[in-house]
Image (tube, rainbow, N blue to C red):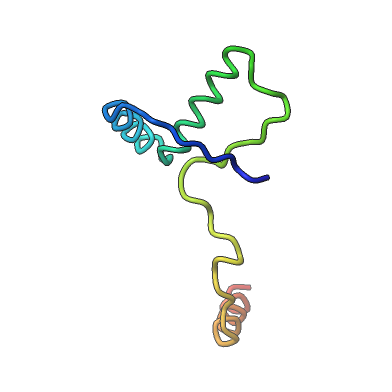
Length: 86
């Protein structure tokens, strides 16, 4: 699902406070704003039931696609280490 893009005008002091809070929570400023909006909607009983989940805080975990496959030499060394341990 594609994310909606909006232009949001904020008082610079409010933006700075949000940015500091987001940093403390390991979120981007954009994610912090979405988090706060979702929380406000939920507290008001207005959060739709079919709303998607937010990405977890912090940096995304590396997937197997992000890490290169080991070279054949590295695989043989790893196999040899396992044989010696067993």
